[in-house]
Amino acid sequence: MGGRMRLIVGMTGATGAVLGVRLLSELRGNPRVETHLVVSRWARATVELETGLSAREVAALADVTHSPDDQGASISSGSFRADGMVIIPCSMKTLAGIRAGYAEGLLGRAADVTLKERRPMVLVPRETPLNEIHLANMLELARMGVSIVPPMPAFYNRPESVDDIVDHIVTRVLDQFGIETAGARRWNGFPRSPAGRAGPPADVPAPRHNGTKQRSARS
Image 1 (cartoon, rainbow, N blue to C red):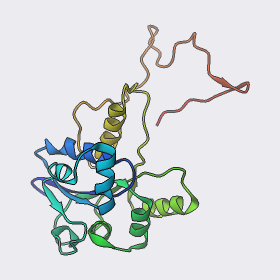
Image 2: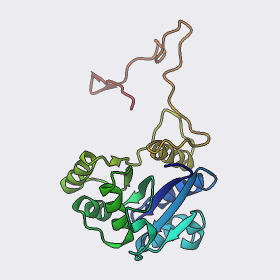
Image 3: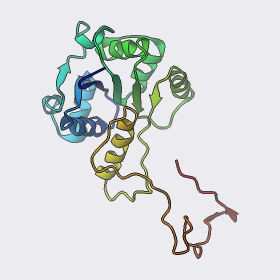
Image 4: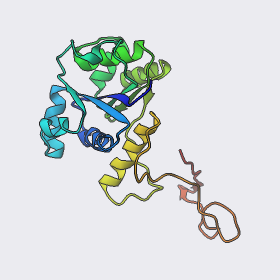
């Protein structure tokens, strides 16, 4: 699609409202992206509780805001040209509804349209621990082509604050749509030693746990 990218942004009542707010703030200054926001009723309460912002202040970060009950909104139809959808944070109820095709409210309908039109969809699930139903729903959606991006922190970039962690998560979410974020701190491999070898210093012993050497991995 030519012109500005149209991205539907959904926020549910799951904890982690700051993730959706930060994503909207990042895209607010991006002239190449047009955001269409849907905030569920419980998301409004969670936003106020966790961030101190009002629903009106969050709505002001989006280009277009739709009522969660407006089934006649533009984004409820596949003929409305959108480039993708992200639900951040995504509750297990919303995730289950999407998996089952239960298009309740505008958020569920827009997600159903995104799936049927085979457009990119990213879900940022916020729940722990996960039960078998949660995992089965995520697996089935992943098989449908949905990107499941849990808000996992990274520590190789040595975050100094919660803001640093939130910024990294939002960066990884927007990566799924090919949207670059300002100031992204990305992994570029282990620093090279004076001998030109990459990896940890040779004089640092491998970590042990109960007498067993542990493997290290990076993802």
